[in-house]
Image (cartoon, rainbow, N blue to C red):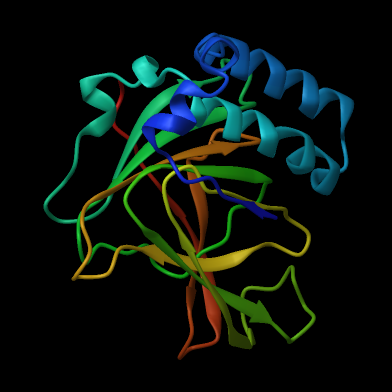
Amino acid sequence: MVSHCAISDQTRKCGETAMTEYHLHRFLDDARQAARANPEPADCVAAVAPLMHRLLLGDRGFLEPGHFRDDPDHYARNAVHIGDDGGLSLYALVWNPGQWTPVHDHGTWGVVGMVRGVLEERNFIRSDHQNETDEGIVLHRGGVILMTECTVTTFVPNPDHIHRTGVAEDREQAVSLHLYGRTMNSFHVYDLAAGSRERIDVFHNES
C-alpha cells in the first residue's frame, strides 16, 4: 500500500489549520487505538497509513535535532518513541548516500513515511514455502519502490515482508519515519548465497 503527495507551499497552506494540529502524541494515540481495533495486520496498516500521512503533512516540530543524527558507517536509527509495554515503536532513520540495510524481515507490521529525500526499497519473494525455517531459503528479487517526501508504505508479517532498503550513491541524504507493531530490537538477516537467515539484535540511538 503506497500513497504519495507532493509537498509545496500551496499544499502546506491548503488545510493548514487541520494539518498543523495533528502532532506526535495524537498520532501515537490514534495508532494504538487502530492497532487494538484491528488485530489483523493488513487491516491495521490500512488504518494507520492515513495517520502517518497526516502526521507528515502537519507540523514536524516533534522531530528534534537528535532525531536527525547520522552515522558515517551505516544508516542511523534514532528512537522517537518506544512503548513501555513492548508495543508500538517509532524511529527516525537517517540514510546517507550509499547506505543500505542488509536483506531482512521484521516479524511485525510496519508503516513507513518519508520526511525528506528518496529512499529505495528492493523487495524479495520467498518461494520455498517454509516460512519458519532458517535454512533452505529460496529468495527471488521482486519489485522496487522509490519513496519520496510524504510517501507512505506498509508491510505485514506472515509471510514476512523481506526487503533491502537504502539510498543510492548519487542521491541526497534521506530521513524516514518507521512505526512498528513491536519494539524493533531484532530481525532476521538473510544470506542469499547460503540460502539461510539468522536473527540479529539491532540498536538505536536514544533521543
